[in-house]
Length: 189
Image (cartoon, rainbow, N blue to C red):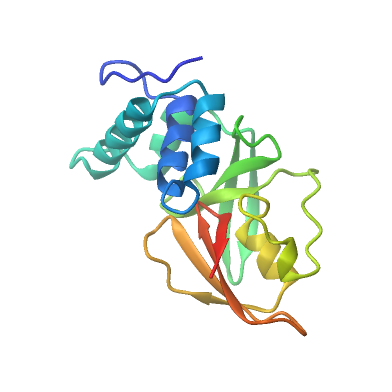
C-alpha cells in the first residue's frame, strides 16, 4: 500500500493518515518516523499528502468538511446521535489502520450539517489504558476524553484547530499540561 503521492491520484485513507502524522511530527518526530515507515511512505509523500489536504480544506470551491471526510475515508464505520451538553450531534467513526484501537470521530450537526469537532477517540469496545497517575500518560497512549475522565482537568486554548491542551491537577501529584494533536496525547509540559 503506497500513498497516492501525485495530485491526480485519489486522496485516500493512507494519505489521510499521513496528514495526521504530519501534524504530530512537531511533538513526536521519532514515533512519526516509525509510523511513516510502517505505512511504507516517504517523508516526501507525507509532505505531499499534507499539501494536498491543506489545498482541499482551503480551496474556495471546496466541499464541506463532512463531505470531504466521506470522499477521503469512505462511508463511516458507524454513525450515532449523541448529546453534547444541550446540543445533539451526529458522531461518525472511521477506522484508522495505523491505530487499530482508535477511530477518527467527526461530530457534526444533525443531518449532515457543519462539523463541530474532529479527532481520534478509542474504538467502541477497545480497552483504553489504565490511567492512575500522570506517569501513566505516555505519548500516543490515550485520547483527550480518556485523560479528561481520569484526572481533574481544565481545557486550555490550543495552538491550532487540531491541537488541544488540558491543564491537569492530579490528586497528590504535580500540576501539568497535557498536549494533544488530533485528540491523541503527544506530551506533558
